[in-house]
Length: 173
Image (cartoon, rainbow, N blue to C red; front, side):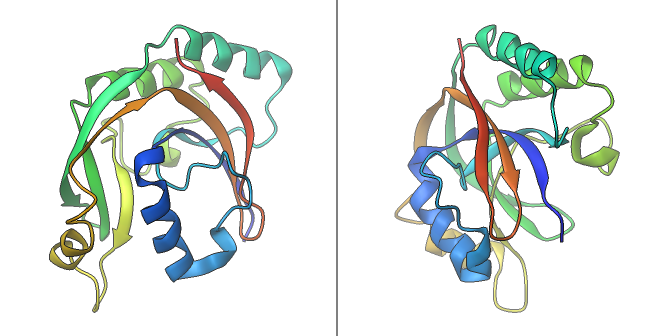
């Protein structure tokens, strides 16, 4: 499998939990980069795997023009494909950031256009299976959620088995 770039907002408050869950499924996706956000909300992905300096500068300008985002993470939900996720509330600032990134980089539609234009901000925590359900994941997270967080960094992260790392990072605001 080849890797891919993602613009993501790391969520340090859930990093330990998501990192452990990632290791449970495939420890080759556990990064040795201490900045890497295993727990994150995707702003836009996949993204340019080899961005030019001009592209990086445009992302930096967008990040500088985006205020840090305060959200409450409490409610779990499940997408039709089985992905179990935490719903950020409110999500309007996250939707706005994605819309501005898409307007700036229309050649990189969210999720390759697979889910249409209305991208739902979320933090992936698990995947439904014969052993995993929304209810079982809620039980695992009972001492972790709810949590209030401020998302204040945008990362260009590289996701590849054996090589997950942050390529660039910008502070919001």
